[in-house]
Length: 232
Image (cartoon, rainbow, N blue to C red; front, side, top):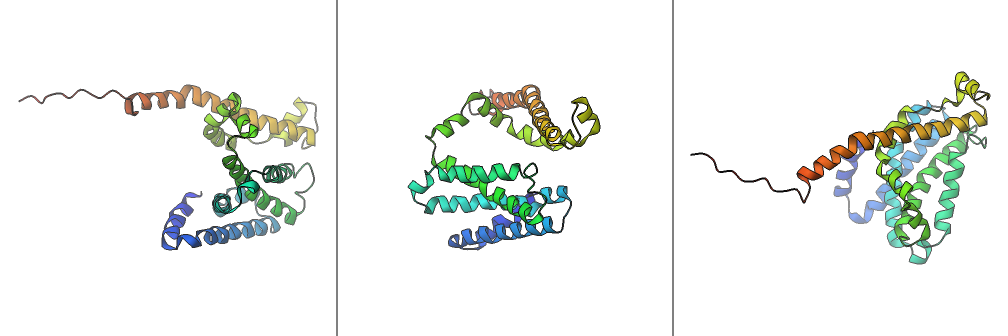
């Protein structure tokens, strides 16, 4: 997916002066954003739009832009609550675009995609700049921290959990209308809980034992193997 751009982008940053890195990030992000608009306008297949590499890479570039801005913006602005609430509001609207009827307009749909690209790294920037905030302390709450521990497994398994809200059998089981807001909402909960359960089982019975084995044998505190003399 994005790996092809890692191979291109890293040498690009080495070949251009450091003072041009921000412009490079902005230029490539603009390309990804414009392509996102075009894909929505031309009604490309949603799976293709979701998996298109440059668009996904643009999210990382937006993170790079936020890093540069974080070094230039005054500390007072970085600690402002609006720096968190504004991207959170954009992200919430983008996630609820279908129930709000905003996904029917391709232009608005594309704008919300770009807004989500910008909102996510802005939230990360705010968190990095406000480590003593009570909001950041909430991220250290045990269930949230555990979700971070199993997040990679969740990321992998969520690709296989499709929203069943459009299924007639699923809707009939819950006595709901297929594709209705209620059916899609319940299906959304389903697509969250199933990957969560699979990620937990994967960490408990597969990843964690391998991690402990690795730490025991190759960690910093692993006991040194005894040196045996070679027989003469």
